[in-house]
Image (cartoon, rainbow, N blue to C red):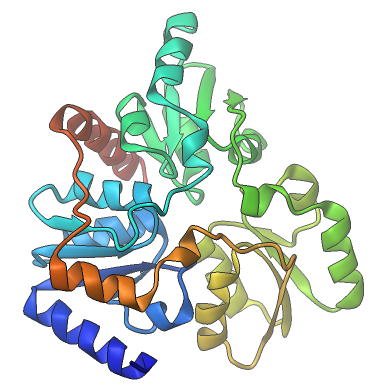
Length: 302
């Protein structure tokens, strides 16, 4: 079956099932083309909760589908590829948070939305890459733990007087890109500006003209007068970048910046889960309720 036909059949299924398709910026281009909502992981869940859709299909990874269920427990949430996980989210557990709290009583815990529901439930408040500084500054006390991304924590520490304790986690797609690699790309494109995600390591961020979330990078690319932009995040973002600014040239900071688990999902997977109503994601209420509180605290801060 050709791509266009399959896309059309998925759209028909979505309509018939009263379903909505959420697609993360890092998904394949042919999936982004048919999204009801396209965006960053948490923003998608927030917008989906506002709709009257009975079914949410989340083209993303596991923690994203969990967040959608946490905010919309009355909806059916489907994940096209249940094995699509996140190495960063897997780098911290609820048990480790519990142990930290025992050793550091009173120190608030901020969890990045790129974490499991169980970790969110153990946290005081959640954050995204765009609001991490505001969230860190909102919690009480002079010290705060930010999990699981150490690079995001170190980035936030530059903009607060608080002591930010970074966790040892990292996103392999962003963290493993080296400054020498980026400098080589910059040397080949001396007129280009460089936009990087805060999950990149500090040496790479020091080279950036702009540091921000995926949505922030999209906005920066749209507004800058520069015609060449080096992009320091997962290459799925090139689809919306080129769509929004076809007159500009977008250059990957590294050819390695591809998330294999994000690319697992195919159109065939989306069609199948909708047709069979399988791969339903739920979160036990004893975890969902405190995780929801941590997410809603973040929304109040933002």
